[in-house]
Length: 383
Image (cartoon, helix red, strand yellow):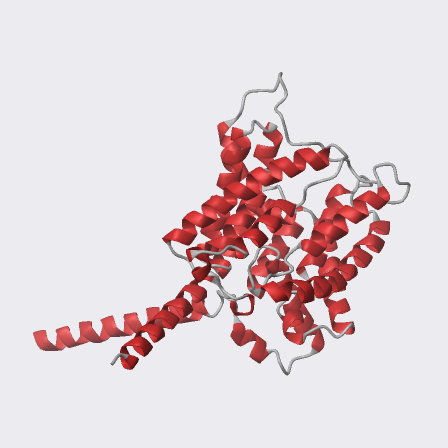
């Protein structure tokens, strides 16, 4: 009797373990790059493929590559502002369709690489527009600017490939600055708000609210999409976590570093509360902390240094460009990440070639396999 009970318990334990493993394996299908989805979509209709490509492009803005993450992020944008969500949708469709029409590389199009710059352009045009929401004439520069990003991305990629560098968001930064310079605050058709420098702090400023500063850290992740609302920002952070927990940790850490940098430079409280002080630090930290470099203790510290560098560079550029009413956008993080990728020395050994970049956890696993293969090869060739 006792033996039968023991056997039943062991069988129940094995069944429970097997069930848990199936659940875990199922969850793994939805994180990372979801490469299995590309094979599944090969024989599907163009409209469905375009939807997946567009959602990958949405997530590419925050250095992820997951259509489910893109869907969550798009939902967060519609939650924060239906008008901004619509602009982002139109922007990513305009740029992706332009890439298809002009015959860009299919792997790049399906991976969302020709969509994310167009989405950023459309979102920021909406944010800086002083004509208010649902100003339909704005769709004209949104579509044209998003489409133009494809040509800039293609040209810059050909130029930067010789150094194995990504075009990143250079097209977005260039197009947006050109648009704001062309229109101006008093343009009768496309007026926009002038940008003011983030510092120094006003002499009669109110006392700093610590809780609002803490709330500003997750908002810094949302500001990558020009979204400063706390709820949508947390949903965006959750979307990054779905793609890669390691990348989400670096996003939050980088935003905290950027906020700390803003505090040390006594920037206006609004920049701290809204997350504007943190988003460049978040991007700089994410780019180095496992995405373009294999994660390790050394590259983790390197990512924190990159976050500080990006945040202080953003303050400097914002003060400079704010004197003529222009935003610094994400120039700081883009330039810093590009410089970090050109780094030589021992840290360069952790650099991942652009064509092999995957989710940080996948990068780490592949790097471990590569090192193990090298050890076996050295052992087998020893005399």
